[in-house]
Length: 335
Image (cartoon, rainbow, N blue to C red):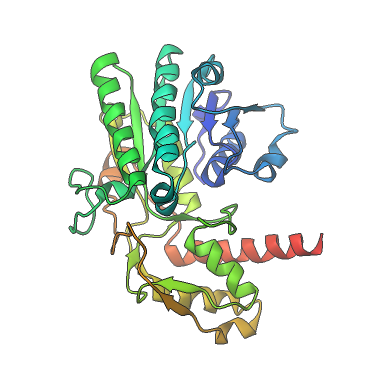
C-alpha cells in the first residue's frame, strides 16, 4: 500500500466503520497513523470486525445511528475528515423494504452532510454506487452518462449524489463520491438473506453445497477487490488536486467477469484447499429483480484526477479473498 504520511494524527470519522468496507478503512487509517472514530449502529456491521482496534488508543467507537442528527453532530465534532459508509446496502433489501432503505440512505446521508458542514469538516468522501447507472446500456460506464434507476436502492444512492452537489453549490461544502462496483474481500459477510455473491458462494462450496446462479450465468460484473477501494478512499481524502474535488468517480478495477467465470475461478482456487470442491456443480435459477445485466467501469477519470492505479486484478483479489475465507471460517469452526 502507498504511504499516506499526511494522514498521521488527522482525525477521521468513518461511519459504518464496523461494516465490511468501513472496517477495512479503519484498519488502513490506523496503519497510516490517523486518529479514527467509528460510528456504527451494528444493524449490518459486526463487532468482530473492529475488535482488533478497540485496544488501540487512536481508535474510538461511537455506537449510534445516522438517522439521529444529534448523534451525527456528536460524531463530526472536532473531526478533520469524514468517510461516510453507513448505509443499508442490497438491491433486494431495498425492494423488500424501500422505506427503511430511504430513511437510512437518504435521510441519514442528509443528516451527516448537515452535521459535517456545521462542524467545518475539510473533506467528506462518501460511498456512492454503480447501481446509479440503472438501465443505461453503454459500456464501459462513464460517470457522466447514467440511465433510470432500477431499484429503490439505486434511487437512494443517486439522491445522495444530488444532495452532495447541492451542498457544494449552496454551502461551498466539498465532497467526493465513489461509485463502488461489486466490492469483495476480507470481512465481507457470507451470511444472511442479502449476502454478496462471492462470500456466499465460497461458504457454500466449502460446505460442499451447490450455489445457485440467478439466470444463465452470463451477466457480468466489474468485481473489485477491497484493497483497491481502500486505496481510492485514501487518495480521495488526501488529493491536493483542486479539480478532484466535488466529483463522482467509478471505484473499480475496469474489467468484467461473468458469473460463470467467477464460479470457475472460485472452484479452482478453493480446490487447492479441498480437491472435492472442483467437482461441485452449480444450479441456475430465475433472474433477480432489479439486476443490471452487465457492469463495467471506466476508471480513466479516477486515474487522471486522483492518480488512482488499482493494485489488484479481480483474479489476484479473488485468490486473496478465498485464502482469507478459508482460514477465517476454518478458525471459527474450530472455536
